[in-house]
View 1 (cartoon, rainbow, N blue to C red):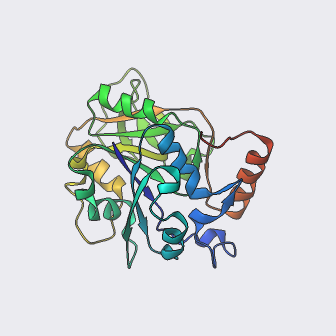
View 2 (cartoon, rainbow, N blue to C red):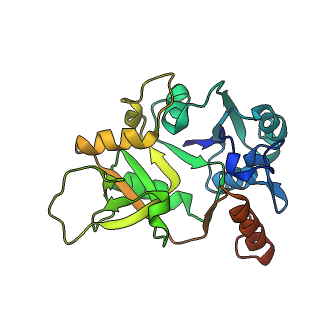
View 3 (cartoon, rainbow, N blue to C red):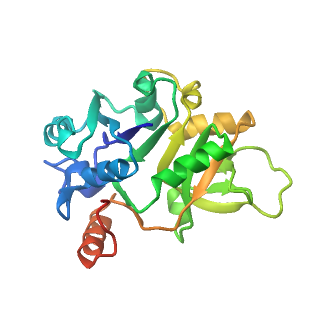
Length: 244
């Protein structure tokens, strides 16, 4: 299986830290943040990775190179203007050779068993699988509603119409980790900025199976200076460990 790590964001909420350093290269323990995600993929046997770049992207390319130092093969997609998650994946869909692939955000730190996510995706025969979490600040991240089997019903209120379940839908957040069948990208227009969540909603409305994989391990979006400092403290205390 191949993977894509999304790394083209501006990191504007992390200024001044990101004025001269792209967010994926902010230091975290012995490595830049981005390398944590690469090592997580390598730990689970994924070595071919596409990385999209935009803001200060050449720094990322120069730092990571071909990936040979981690026994990986890295490819890059430079976006002159940001394409969003959907547009970024659409731009490089030929890279995945019509096979399911994994997507990670380059600005998160997660303790998740990627192999289990992939296995769950295959068992469910799903069009895509979203890694989900319980979170007290769920409204901040956007609510993902699922049934009791953790199949996704609605994303931010959009998707399947109300249907009989064993009770009210479960409400969780999307951790930005997903396994995607290339068919999911069919409704994404090429060459424009688009959210992958719009493609999810489109397919939910068609009745497609979107699976949810619920995990409870460490997760943090390194989106603000405060959260970045907290992750640094968590690494220093041993609460989160580098993938081996």
